[in-house]
Amino acid sequence: MRLSSCQGLLVYDEAGRKLGHVFDFRCRGAPVNRRVRDDADVTTLVYGTVGLLERLGLREARNCEAQWQDVVAIRDGRIVVRAQGGRQRRG
Image (cartoon, rainbow, N blue to C red; front, side, top):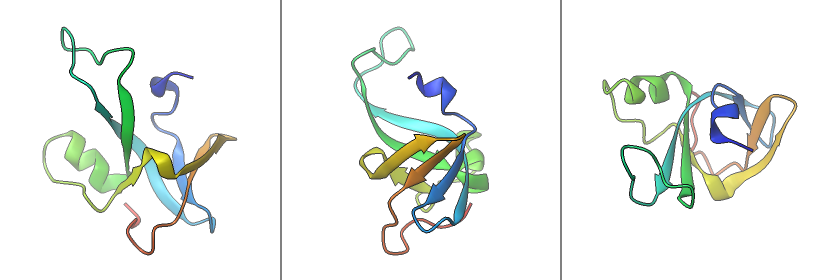
């Protein structure tokens, strides 16, 4: 699966609460020629309106991100993430 196919998908927590759309990903690994290496590890996904504002460089989005390890499922046009005790807020 390519990350680009996940961009724009809706993000829900395990309780079924809608958190927002995926707007960006963070990866570990040095970029090569302005592209992420094929072996880079995805660490975080950024979602919601605040996530979009961060992507545009207008705001920092620490409250609207989920660790990639907390992704439970990707199916039916949505990404389901494990709830983290209120760490994830709607965007």
